[in-house]
Image 1 (cartoon, rainbow, N blue to C red):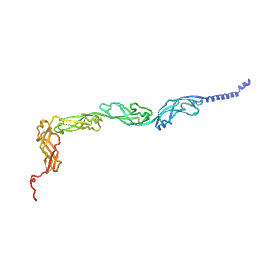
Image 2: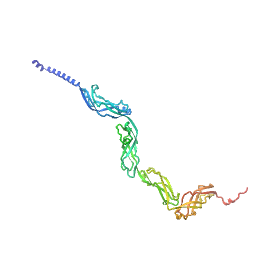
Image 3: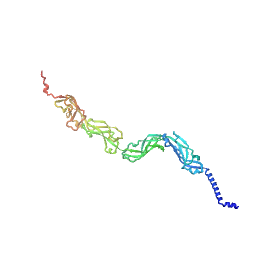
Image 4: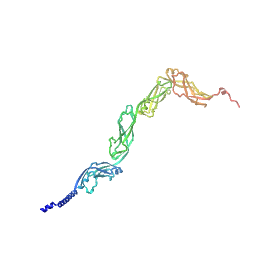
Length: 428
């Protein structure tokens, strides 16, 4: 026993025991670290490769894909457990082998940072694959911009067609989506407008039924539309005619009817403020006896639009309170006769139509009417001519001549003295 106690109490004994314990502990740790252990990782985000470059080169794009996270259960040695985290384990789907549109179920690949794939066994994956929808990329070069004016215009003003810039936009995206686009809709809300306004507004893409078409894969050439709403003044303008006094009548003796009497026009407010009536033309009261009807074109000043649409107006003028009478006169003379020539009237009498108050024209006879022909344009040309005349009513200002076609025929001859006309030629 003494020997055993001596050995136990010796320093060497403790050294040996320590070495043995260290070996046993090392063997235990080495055995524990080399055992396998399951590791579960959740919330792993999937990365898609090739969707933004390779597919676009092939006029393809991803329109829908699984966005759920992946859960993995991995069997690895205990020594590697600490190196497998959400930051070191990566999940990806390769789209670079896709060459046509359709729905694909793609198995994802798993990679690790600083861990050999051979040291990891995937015992469970949820989900097992990712679903990807591939569509063909299409472009609509011109989608028309159409606006809805959801506002008001002040009374007496009108909104003309809205001007958009640009008038069309380019839209690209999935063929199955953008093929449904009918137009780009703009909604403008302005109140009590009295002048032209402009602005910038966003738009929405809609189908033929007005339903909005939205997709994150749609791209457009512009994000906003500039607009201009032309606002013009609206006004009713009376149509008038200028009456030229003549034939014994003035505008007080005339009754004028115009159809239509007014037209509705639009234009700049300042421009329309100076337009209260629109003159169609001139009617000479001496050109008819009792009434006349003429048609005039409706001509508007620059910058004024005809909203009524009438291009012509009919004007009827009637004479009231005056009577007409036909009088024959033989009082015909000529003026502006060239020296050395004499006019001899071929027309011996002429019927003249006159108009005036009844009590006055009843007193007028042919002796009160003189017809004067003007030979200025004839000069020294001997012959017969129809020359214009001026008709005068002597002593009665209240009466006038109707019409102006009172030409007479005259023979212009050399003025030979009477004694020369009677001489006989001398014999040779």
